[in-house]
Length: 116
Image 1 (cartoon, helix red, strand yellow):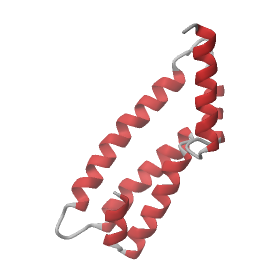
Image 2 (cartoon, one colour; image 1 turned 45 degrees about the vertical axis):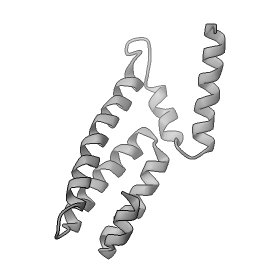
Image 3 (cartoon, one colour; image 1 turned 90 degrees about the vertical axis):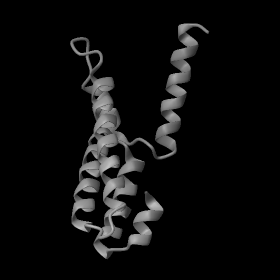
């Protein structure tokens, strides 16, 4: 497979991520910040997002396993995840976080466990 085909596949894949609601305009703005001086900017930012998300999701899993659920603690973790997903344009993650935070507000343990 040559470079042109790979580039075309990448563009097609990225376009599908927008159409399916995984990414939004914020991701486009993030890409616009990348230039010759920092050609790996987007990769670095998204990698940090994944590292932070993994940590937050592990903390959420531990918090949900507790006998007495601390909804404020869970909400704080989800709020962080919502903010970081919003900053990179991960629209679908952001929307799930909003629903999750609503379950925290309602102290709806069934809703929390169905989303985790």
